[in-house]
Amino acid sequence: MFGFPWPRIFRAIIVIGQVQLKNINPPEPVQASFNEVNQAQQEKERLINEARREYNKVIPLAEGEKDQRIREADGYRLKRINEAEGDAARFTALLAEYVKAPEVTKRRIYIETLQEVLPGIGSKIIVDGSTASILPLLNLDRQQGGQP
Image (tube, rainbow, N blue to C red; front, side):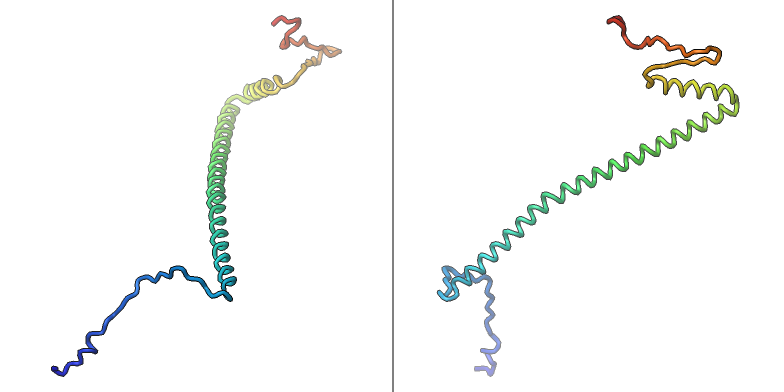
């Protein structure tokens, strides 16, 4: 008509969005192989799902235990630091008192130590340097004859 190449300008473009194959039956000689491939794919998916389920069960539990142990370790660290700082402060205070009055401080430390140690001892025997024998003390702590 006008000398234009109309068939070349108006080419059609077809885009295929989806292909569905329904009721496909492979030929009889490859049917067994086709079924094995399908079973293998299903087994693969099953194993992947089992692994994911196990992962989701074990990993969060392990992470929770990890966080708990970290918190416990951090608490233990703070406890030990506080105890050490308290012991150092106590020693510094004791040193200051010792510098002021050494004999009184020594005696006080001795008495405090006895107060800590003696309650844990079952029977007590007092030995006096001026006596020739050992005198057992009457244990007044235990009840005798049902009387307090």
